[in-house]
Image (cartoon, rainbow, N blue to C red):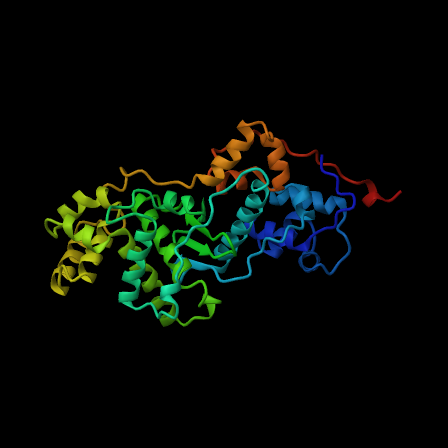
Length: 383
């Protein structure tokens, strides 16, 4: 059982738990029977150590172990986060995903005590120093990356596995928002890519992963805060990442050789080979001048007429690649009897549901988590 002796309440943890739960300050205050001002003071650290009963109420409502509110691991990422999302993404959803990203690093920090993770092996960009990332630069970068990783001109069968094998930390989460596809953070020595589980499509996940890789390579040292960018600047940055993803997944030489026609039926035929959407292949054909504007417009109309712009043929057939490294690390530790699942969860100081989600573990991996007994102090603990 948790012993809070000699541990100091961490206001930041209360804010993180509240945001992860999706509650406002007022909503949390109402749930735990405090005023909004009292909760705001707790989150700012402008009050004395909370009463034990208050901590227990917070833990119960937010679903976090009490020890979490006393943990002091500094995991908050300070740099820019590259969101692949529509302009309608709410602040509430954005903040919740950032908190989950911090939780991923907290978990990684503990797992690294027991497991040696793949070395980060992103292509060095010395020859691209000072690049403005025009179209030719992006095409060259994609070709260079494929060469660096020995991919040749063949398709990338599993973009997630490629990233993980080269040291990029990948997690997938339920964002609860169809407006968010993915996001990434450079995070010092080990970059993080977080993919959304809300749009179940193998080819979308492939493209999202490659898109985020583009950000990590092209923008991590040049963009400090994309929230300060104008809509035009943001669109330009996203277009660059899209062009990289397209060029990386559909290399010019290999893609051109595979084309026998530019009909939607043929794009459907080769979709399983390239693991890339019909829409992306049509756009790639236009970018490479394989088709002209008239043909491109015609294909776009056909896509709309067939109602396959959102859900394409084979989307329910192609297997969706899943992050495996964090999952394998947890399972390896438990299976080798280095730590029991319960002990490992205790070290994480996080809810089992969150650890299972971000590590892609099956639901219930840590077993049924019994709630701590709900005790109540008599007269506030005063005799």
